[in-house]
Length: 461
Image 1: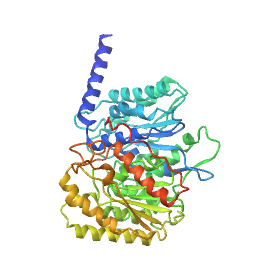
Image 2: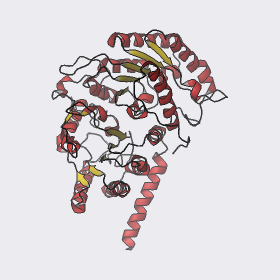
Image 3: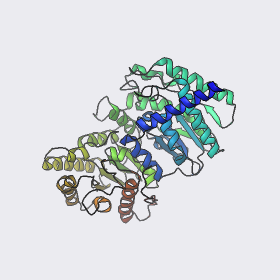
Image 4: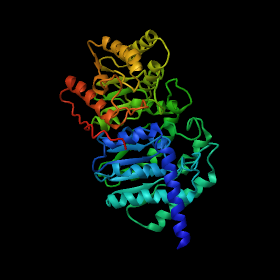
């Protein structure tokens, strides 16, 4: 009994220490806070994990025989660890999801200051699974292994031990609501790099295509209509990176290069602020497709331009037509840097002209940058840049103003949207951004069904 109690205390201390050390990291916290604004609706399929889950546009990669997307929501968070996901999981379970796919642990065993043991990871995953079942008994939980990888700070002995312990836990539990989806052998090519991974840890479209194929039987469970993945079988030879290169953004580009574009789509291009918002949820329609880049704050016009190249790349067997509209929010790093505004404006105009050429006839919305906590930056850099964007409006081009709705009387950003001392947009800010975008879209497409979250109480959790 004393040994068991001591072990529990040690695990609790580890969890508390990890939350104290890592949960306040601005990137992850702002994404968790954005999740708070959009609790998944009843019957959702939740993908829960770290960057390997976060990077991928899951909602776009599965569909039924009639072309309908599955109700998938992405709750991956780059860099996160199991205790953080456990601390935030109640936000995902409010409306009883149908399925939750869990892949967690690779950061737990690698993050300096944590260095979790397999036993500690197992305890956290068990707690996640138990919490899901307690809160939503009809939800099916699918545990997935820690994937093979080639990084210097992860021990194969640890992740293989975790995987064996997860299998044993599911087997010994013997519950109908709990399954183990063993995709480890399917994705061992990650370590070989090449077309499968650019860094030996994260996945290209070729690898995600294999993962999606492996998940099809589990996605199919409970559905009458046949489920498919939209990725072409030749993903490894067809994927393109838009010229971004062999990095995380280049891998994300490979996904969008293979995704179809329909006439009803609204493509949202931009930097980290776009990437880290689940815009199909924030705007309440599956037609909004996220084409954002970046996992740290900011992003450049040049990177957004290359993502546009990947998105509209001609790929054999992948149908791409002119979308209904394009949203553009980019230039954060450019404007917050030291580059002359005239140069930034010229680069932005070149991107606008590129998008017009790539998608002739699509309505184009230029979304102004939101304010930050520095009034001088807002006045001397952001305001004139946004004024330039406004000057480009006319014809098929519209300007969307974010500053008015998010600026305090002293010229700084409202702290409910952008917390003091930070530049990241938090949950209330995402909700307000969604609202003004929805108003602009509805003005031009009055029959378009959109639903945005309320601002909430502004509490940062």
